[in-house]
Length: 315
Image 1 (cartoon, rainbow, N blue to C red):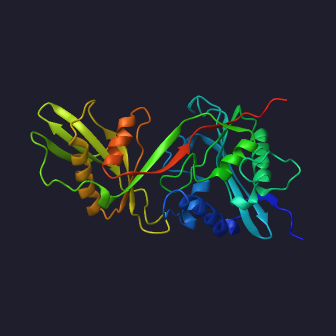
Image 2 (image 1 turned 90 degrees about the horizontal axis):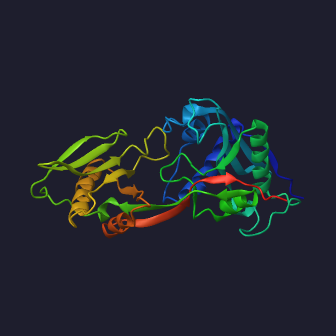
Image 3 (image 1 turned 90 degrees about the vertical axis):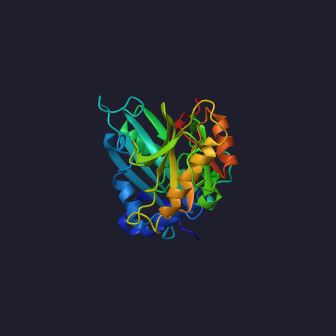
């Protein structure tokens, strides 16, 4: 007879199976995405990339579900401090930073909650809520940010995770963001000459990125920032080949040739960096930006639901 699933704290000897669980979910969203064991372990202790919010964390916990010596589900939780240094949206909140499980370890998406069923996914969600209750936080939030580029929120490729959160009483209260991807070779070819009357300047960007700024005689016309440090070799399972457009600013009514020319210059730099694909996060308030990026070689990778809050049904 199969053994019952056991919810327990994460142990270091779980690291390989936990990494396999993380990478299975990451690769379902971003092709070939993978984190090293060291990256996953480090992310349980701190998130240095979140240099604003990470110092606000007062407590962390990682839970796993073991069945017949296999880790079939896991979750990472954060408790944010309740003091004036913490931003108001995070102050005194608890968050399921991510909750993962293999699809067969939960009911079919759309199935009603069954308190009597020992589904590992629902047992894990209940254990997470119990921990958040013990922390006595004012609100309970959910997310799905993994330590790999481009995986955050609850992506469309995780219907089993969305169903688990919804059965547990979480409601999607935020936005649904579009994530685009393009092979660098699909971007417009570099023109080899600046736009007439313009000059290109490459500088360090505000976020430690490479900033390509187009200027004319009157000043700045447009800029694009590239982050080529998404997959540092010491943190990931394979050498980095992914970058992202971390910032893009165009005039209100750009000339048709402006974005293709700027992306061509971005392609030139990315090829020199050995990058083979690039992510983009178009502004939801500017639908023309998505259309322009799509016309320039990008395609939709996923749509991800950000912003989840626990709102249990009232009896």
